[in-house]
Length: 174
Image (cartoon, rainbow, N blue to C red; front, side, top):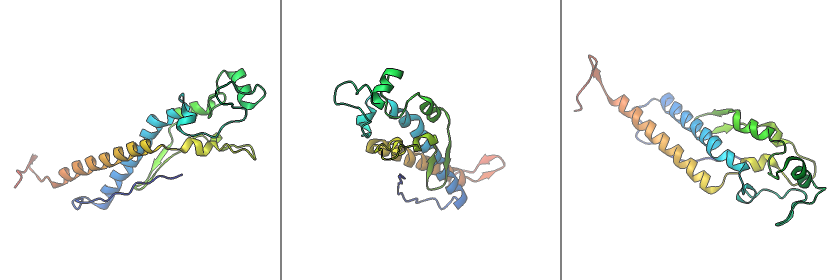
């Protein structure tokens, strides 16, 4: 699932195309990093099943303990938890510690462990879709961060471009 934001750049005539692209690439990279640091850990937090609307796992019952012979029941007995996106915690540790982010001028890609792509045939559970779900308030926060970062960087770069330096001293503004 790809999320995109549409925005217009205006007033950047003083900057070259490569400078604007570098600013956009940096902003997208930092937005991906922010999602990874701020919102990815919430996928395993208490209440994440309801917050992100995860597909119910085999053996889960409403309000009670899971069926003992089901996947969830065995996980509870063996490991002491019923978190949806982890069994032993290996994939969780890998997702939260190994940063693999790449950005271009118009998108960011945050790579997560390939184990989220594994799926038992016929199962309705799709962990790769569940891990990538973004709530509307998270999307709004990321959009705000992205646009503010771009606006601030363009403002700073525009100021640097508009100054003329003579003999090591900035020229007086006319």
